[in-house]
Image 1: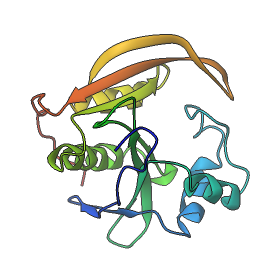
Image 2: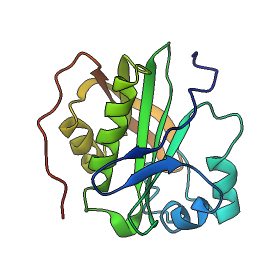
Image 3: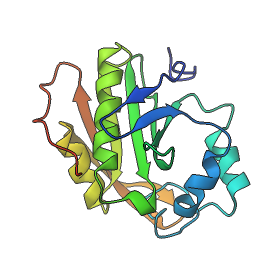
Image 4: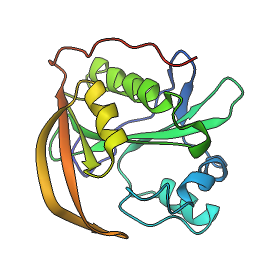
Length: 187
């Protein structure tokens, strides 16, 4: 696995409340109310999507070398998107996540990101995971820190996005790091 080749097939993962399955056609419609909303896309590197088709073309881009999981609840309703993709060298992956607006503040991101982190380490796919968080996104910083990631760097004016120049924090967690303390997901 190199930074230019696909990571792997996407296995189905399960948590206490969600099934995390591969992306499939139709998911763009469930994700569009969130990823089509400029307020929800404030911390993305691009502006909100204009249509479900534009979103699908981005989600399913054939040249994207990462893996996508779609979290669905017991009723099959989409709760969020979770990703892992190659970073700068073998077995170093960057992760990302977005929770559907209607499911925010319900512990979806923590529960599913924790399952993803556990899978990537337990499978041997990763020796290190990274996450890049906009410095204005306090909720995401709290989430990633609660999962045992350490802030390793601050990059000022690191990238220009649809909202202008952005500062980011880079977080890392090694497979050899101790696990974070357990938490109970909200009911």
